[in-house]
Every structure is written in C-alpha cells, then in structure tokens.
Image 1 (cartoon, rainbow, N blue to C red):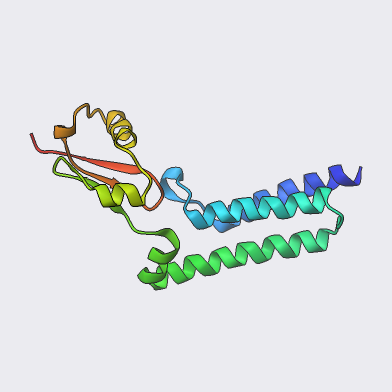
Image 2 (cartoon, rainbow, N blue to C red; image 1 turned 135 degrees about the vertical axis):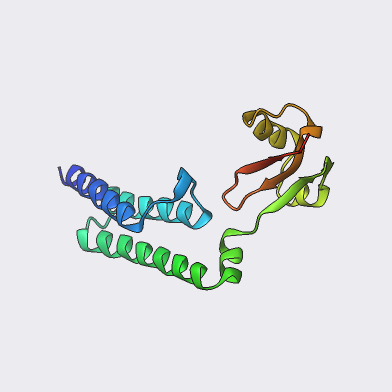
Amino acid sequence: MSTILHAVFGYFFLLLIVRVMGRRPGGQLTIPEFVVVFLIGGIIILSTAGDDHSFTNCVCGVITVALMHRLVAWLKSKSPRFGALVDGTPLVVLKDGQWQNEAMEHAHLDEQDVMGAARTKGVRTLDQIKYAILERNGAISIIKADK
C-alpha cells in the first residue's frame, strides 16, 4: 500500500512541478527539459520503488532539479553564449541546393532526414529548398526557394 501512495503522491507532485516550470511554445522540448523530465521521473521512481520511501527526500530532490532547471533557463536568458553551450546552435544543412556535408556529419543527419522534413512542408524536390536548418530543438526547418 505504501508503494501505491508514493506513486500517487509522486504523480501529482511531478505534475505540479512540471506545470510550475512552464511550457514551451510549439510543444518542443530542449535538451535541458529532457534532462529534467528523466531526472525527476527517476527521483519519483526511487522514492516509490527504491530503498528510501521518504516523501521528504523525494520532494527535496524534485525541487532541487526544478530549481536547477529554472537557474539554467535564467542563465540562458542572460547569456546567449551559455544558451548556445546548453542548447546548441542551429545548423544550416542545405544551402541553395548544396548539402553542407560537415554540418550533416556533425549532426549525424542524412539527406533522407532532411527530405522527410521537406515533404511535411509540401516540398518534393531539392531545387524547391533554399535552406534546410537543423534547429536547436532537433526540428528541421525548411525554407522554400523563390520560384
């Protein structure tokens, strides 16, 4: 019964913390947000199924992670260099019909990934694309050529 109560408490506490941390436009998670979700989930699981079933330890751990996330978000808003370090920078992977091989290799991306993103924008051929950009959140933006 104790495990069930911890799981219920953990669920609602996690829901509250994620709600307080805020939401992102477009529903895209950044790398720090993925870290927060997995880390908080791990803390909740440890308090539910681990050796230490302490509400206090669970709450302290989750609040610490949430505060660290807020600190990182604040630092990113104050320092673009820190933001680039944490989230990365957008990479141009296609420019004027030319694949940017170094950027593609760095991102472990292949041409089919880019063309798949292009098809979702109604673009069927390479010559219809002016730029393809791998964004900080992992999405691929397609900028159509003027034709």
